[in-house]
Each structure stands twice: as C-alpha cells, then as structure tokens.
Picture 1 (cartoon, protein in one colour):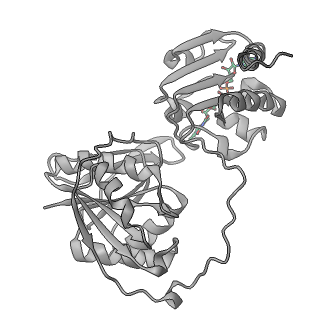
Picture 2 (cartoon, rainbow, N blue to C red):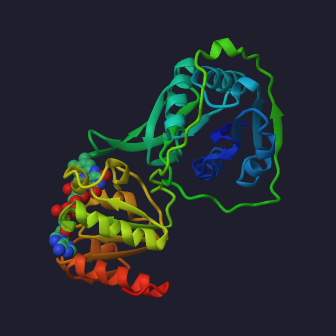
Picture 3 (tube, rainbow, N blue to C red):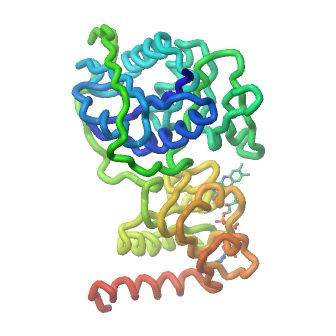
Length: 331
Ligand SMILES: Cc1cc2nc3c(=O)[nH]c(=O)nc-3n(C[C@H](O)[C@H](O)[C@H](O)COP(=O)(O)OP(=O)(O)OC[C@H]3O[C@@H](n4cnc5c(N)ncnc54)[C@H](O)[C@@H]3O)c2cc1C
C-alpha cells in the first residue's frame, strides 16, 4: 500500500496550519494512488495532537517522542524522519515551506538520497506513470516548471502555506497510531536553545482574515500608515505589491504575490494596485476582493467582487472615518 506522508510541523504543542492544508492535498494524491495518508509527528509529550491529525484525514500517524525532540533542531529531526522513511518507504513526503520545513526537508532528502522540489504550487499524480507532478515557478517566476522525481523515493516537496485549503475537519475520523523508538543523544544535536524570545509583532499575512493592501498608486510610505490604521480597525494586516516593497515604502514580509506570500483572507482590499498576474497569483483565492483604482481598465477589476473607480486616498479616509464612527469614535 503506497503511503503519502505529511510532516506535521508543531512548535510548543501547536500544529502549524500548513500541515492540515497538506493533509488535504495528501488525501487527493493518496486517492489517485489507491494509497493511504500518514502524518509524521516528532516531539516530546505531543501524543495529544494525534487525534487532531486523524481528524484532518490521516489514516496513520507515525509518532516519535523523545526529550531531545522537545524543540526543533536540524540533526535529531532529520535523523527521526529519515529513519522512519527508510523503514516504512513512503511514496511521497510533503512538508510546509516554512523556515522549519525548508530546513528539515533538505536534510532528509540528502539522507534518503532522493530529489526535493521546493515551494511547489501544484501537485497531481501522472495517470500513466503514477509519478508525482510537482509544479513551481522557475527562472524568477517567468515560467511554471513541472518537476518529476522518477528514479528515487520518496518524492519530496515543500509547499508554501495557503496554497491549498484546510480540509473539513472530521472529529470522529480515527486511524492507526504507530509509535517508533529511536535512540537520540543530546550531544548529537550540536545546538542548544538557551532562550526563546517571541517577536513582538509578526506579520501574519498568510492567515489574516482581512488584508488591506497597497500598491504603487498609494504614492509613498505615509500612504501605508493610513492603510495600517484601517487594518488595525478591522483586526487585519497590511499587504503590498512588489513595486511598493521595492520602493522601500514597506518591508518584504508584507509582499503578496508570486515572489511574496500567498493569502486567502475573507476580505482583500487592493488600493492603487493594478493587479498584474504576479500579484493576482498570491491573492486571487481571497473570498471577497475590493479594488480601488483610478484606472477603469486596471486588471484587478477583472477579479474584484467590488470595484471602486477613484482616488485611493479619498476612499481610504472615508472608510477609516466610517469604521471609527461604527465603534462610536467621532472626530
Ligand atoms: C518574476 C516576477 C515576479 C513578480 N512577483 C511579484 C509579486 O510577488 N507581487 C507583486 O505584487 N508583483 C510582483 N511582480 C511585479 C508585477 O509584475 C508588477 O510590476 C507589480 O505587481 C505592480 O505593482 P503595482 O500594482 O503596485 O504597480 P502598478 O502596476 O504601477 O499599478 C499601480 C496602480 O495604481 C493605480 N493608481 C495610481 N494612482 C492612483 C490613485 N491615486 N488612486 C487609486 N489608484 C491609483 C494605477 O491606475 C495603477 O493601476 C513580479 C514580477 C516578475 C517579473
């Protein structure tokens, strides 16, 4: 029975949502292969997460618990996942293209002497050969390349958060739990975490429910201050086009698009963004798109649910006033 594995990324007992997204696509791939979906969970005292992994569609969970795995470190995690893969021979292994997933994937692929496709945006099974077709932007995003790993197993890929949606949770779905014992030694880990200092405020674009984004049309840094105020009122985040980032008006971690982040908010507001294909690639799966642009021909209007032709600043200021009035704040 062929198995499609998903590395379950957890930190301090919280599963990264990208792992659920991957369980969803893994199910589709497993169906095409008449195979099964398995989650791979490493950590210390993390068994309570297993039910959650089953409820997102895993038929099996491989669990390794050890004190050395309390927090992520490259060497022990690579060893754990590689040894599991050598023993159980999965057909496919998927990981999130997060900093942790990217670090782990390279090490595991090297240990298993197999190929790894990074930052995949599409995954399907070739009906004739049964190989995994892994599609990703190539040559600076100018073409989409489909990569096949025909000679080695597992076929490995990392996938950016928000490329696939989280499947419906089935709270009663259960599977088989396989516990593995692997010997780890603290001194083999080579690094030690001395302290953990969370960032005060991280940009959480991928999982924001509301994004207020600006482009070249916003005209400067100050414009992004106004957009930030609207985002604060709505409990959302600020996004940006690449040109706004390149102009130095806002940092790269706000960039949406092919070479930025992929987002799926409930509401995406695009102020002064033309809506080129590279920008749309990152936001076209938003539930509701509001576009404000002076140019009625701007391509963003083709995908907008609500289009407003006009100067972004006037509309943004009016929106901010209305939002403040809504919560009883009068200027
Ligand atoms: C390989 C590659 C990867 C790329 N990756 C990305 C990516 O990840 N993300 C991304 O965004 N881009 C990306 N780009 C760049 C992309 O092609 C566009 O150049 C960019 O998205 C345009 O940004 P923009 O819409 O802010 O600017 P413009 O295209 O210049 O559009 C500005 C818009 O503002 C409108 N406007 C002007 N004044 C006002 C006003 N007062 N009120 C309202 N509207 C106004 C204009 O009518 C215009 O439509 C990539 C390009 C390449 C080649």
